[in-house]
Image (cartoon, one colour):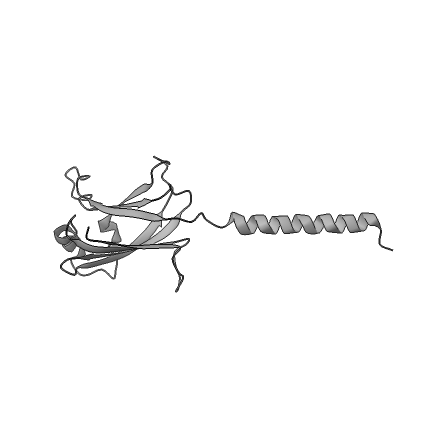
Length: 155
């Protein structure tokens, strides 16, 4: 015989399980992001030569989660630099909407030979025809679609 206590206990158990499921499902999602601007900064280097090409990526809001991004830079001479990496919330300035990325950090095994010199010679403010930025929740493993994407021209 089923009692009211058993029914109430089952209903409460199901409600708790359902609530946990919703919490886990929504707790794992990341806030959407909106790309607003990019620009190349050449004035951060203090003589080392390691930070003379910096890409500033700005969002509509400061990042609150870690995201993965891919970048495709094409200069007016058709030099192409492709790379990516993680963008994390800024501990030093959590209110900043912009992230600074060293362009040399985009060099990888698929980069052209002498990529560092190509960046130094051609990736300059005023000489970049386009920059495509794609942002993902996680590092893509296949053909995942980006959660944000924007093409910037004539930088």
